[in-house]
Length: 98
Picture (cartoon, rainbow, N blue to C red):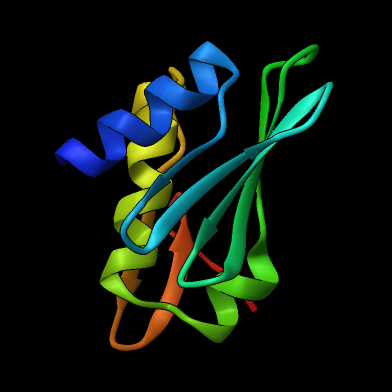
């Protein structure tokens, strides 16, 4: 996992706002929102420990950077899901996101 992704996950676990280059974590009372280049990519809900991927953003920007940040979140938060981008199409767990 990249250093920026480790810091992003640490901010979520510590429930602190964080900004590192193109990535930002914004805390709320019950969740944390993760932003990449000003676009919302995911929400982590503390009570349920759910990581909700913003599929609309993933469809609009299916980039290696978006996939890397989402995979960093999943690994760092103990999720088994996996995001990939193949030939310009976004996938979650080998299912194309349309």
